[in-house]
Image 1 (tube, one colour):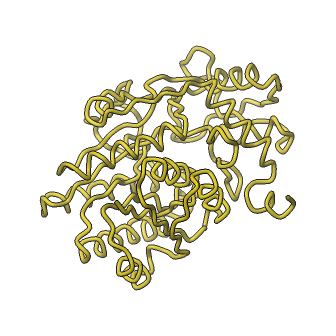
Image 2 (cartoon, rainbow, N blue to C red; image 1 turned 30 degrees about the horizontal axis):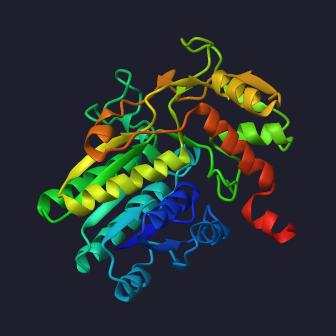
Length: 342
């Protein structure tokens, strides 16, 4: 079966491409490399022992998208493409709405034109906003508090409306919690092109000396140590969640949301302590004021994904720290720069 992976060169996309190939699927990738690197896909080919088609293009280029669909007979689409920085979305809301929603409309229109009606959408736990209770379940109200989260919630609604209008559509809406770690080979991992927004790459960069110290936002939350608690999920477990969801949408007609996390919350200081224990490296840090919109505690109830997709996270916090540090150690300058000095 042939799967189009939009945004397949990114952090989660590249790991998912590898797991799809390992599961026997044919993969075609479209990516404009705005926040990714073609080197990630070269390494996916190397790890899987398979070549696959890659198109450097943008989902906003509808004509290019049509040409890609003319060349391949896709069975399903996995949609990772989109901008994802919360802070940036607050500063540039119009461009976020235009890019994330406009590109998705283009993709859906072309899918419908070619009769491809199976999709997995990369959503986010940010759609929940401030949790009404913990753990978060899929039935909770969606009240996102930033434009990025709003685009995810709005796209979820658009996809639900499409599925209601045509029962041939089958769609899984995967709400990620906090992806961390890297492939155990150390060959693919998280390589932010700008200043990292997520905590783990900041920890690994502080460990390597690339950052002077780690900034922790908030030390006075009502948690066991005052720092925020989050549900961290290993990126390979997350990738496997897509493989399981793909099996579901290919063989049934659904439009369902699924939390993908571990169901366990760790504080920032617990994450740092685990990293220090695994690596033997002390992480210098400074606690600063809370960021607007951050919540004290956020973790998932993932029973629905286990029950309906047959998926459950397998890797713990130690694996996440070990694999993240292996990636950072093997690729201190990231994909492109590291490639140029090899």
